[in-house]
Amino acid sequence: MADVKGQENGDDAYDMFQEPEDFYQAPKEPTFAEHKLLSGKALKVRLVGHNPLWGHYLWNAGRTLATYLEEHSEKLVKGRSVLELGAGGGLPSLVAALNGASTVVVTDYPDPELIENLAYNIEANSAVRAKGNISAEGYLWGSQVKALFSYLISDETESTTYADGFDTLILGDLLFNHSEHSKLVDTILMSMKRSANSVALVFFTPYRPWLLQKDLAFFDLARDAGFDVQKVFEKVMDKVMFEEDPGDELLRRTVYGYELRWKT
Image (cartoon, rainbow, N blue to C red; front, side, top):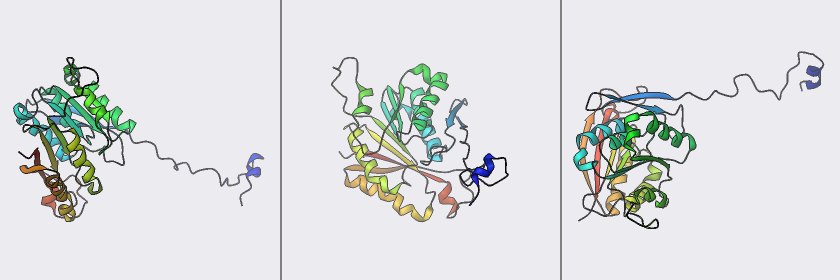
């Protein structure tokens, strides 16, 4: 055993209780990504340096959802309340705020770093901040939605009266988390307004192509819960996000989009 006392006397002995210099990894710095709006202007979002929930990437579904919301803003955004789940950097929510949503609540797992980063992206984009219609909130899938509904209280209602749900829900690249499918469906059931015009947009890429059927099992749960499910979008991206990953490259480049609506 090393003689710790010897070090105190100036001897060059090994201290077994001293960690190597590189034992503690320095926190990774945040990164920034840009998304081009239909106007040609760039919208910059900050991403956390690293996160075990994958919030440090701007996923392909987030990019395509942002563009899809712009292209269909009259039906999906303008004058509507919008809720995003598992937002990461929150790009689609920022675009919804810019395109006339009445209220946008952008959420992710209630990790302080993730929520503070969402709040940063709201404040750092002056055009978004000026709208005054978007808020960041931590939310655990499947839990009660009362805190989310509090953003829907109008000035005309009493403080204890809550609206009956959000008009548009956004879920981008969440289906890889197979164990959470039922909680996601429960959240949609609790939070989407019971209206024929309400919709949940579910966009995803099968980053693990051999598990595509498990990704798609989410939609079986949604149908069983009482939703109509329709495929509305498909786009092959220019390149894969993770070049070293195995599996069918075309599938790993493709974004699929589905709508969930209440059965009529």
